[in-house]
Amino acid sequence: MQRQTPQRRAILSVVSAASSPLTAEQVYGAVTEAFPHLALTTVYRGLDAYVDAGLVRRSIYDDGVARYEIAAEHRHFLTCTRCKKSVPLSVCPFEQLEEQLVRETGFQISGHKMEFFGLCPDCAERNEREG
Ligand SMILES: [Zn+2]
Ligand SMILES: [Zn+2]
Image 1 (cartoon, helix red, strand yellow):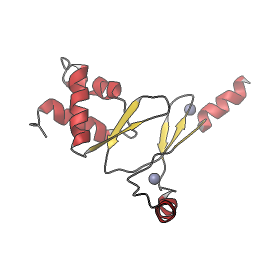
Image 2 (cartoon, protein in one colour):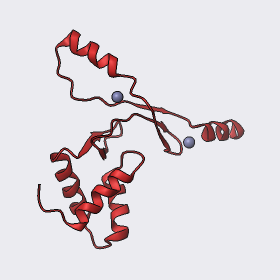
Image 3 (cartoon, rainbow, N blue to C red):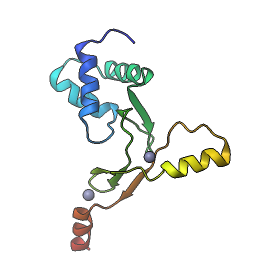
């Protein structure tokens, strides 16, 4: 990959410090705190370079927006549809299923994604109070 500029490094550290996958706009918002003159296209290019290098994984979510996360971390999330809070699961429930699918289909499975949606306890309580 191309030379590592401080801006590029900042992009990677924002992605790796995040507790859940980030959109390019969210990465841009965080990186511009340190580099106010950075262009959004620079963030996209930086993220793509890290994806190509295998350091960052890009997933397109159900809303059609790409999210970026550190590739080494394999996590699933519970996401609250109301406040958008994401809670990572401590385990991957699909490892055995993947092995089974490989046996049954002959596919070489390179990954999977699954996100759980619902109301977090706070929002569920608020929902009940507001009727
Ligand atoms: Zn919530
Ligand atoms: Zn998994």
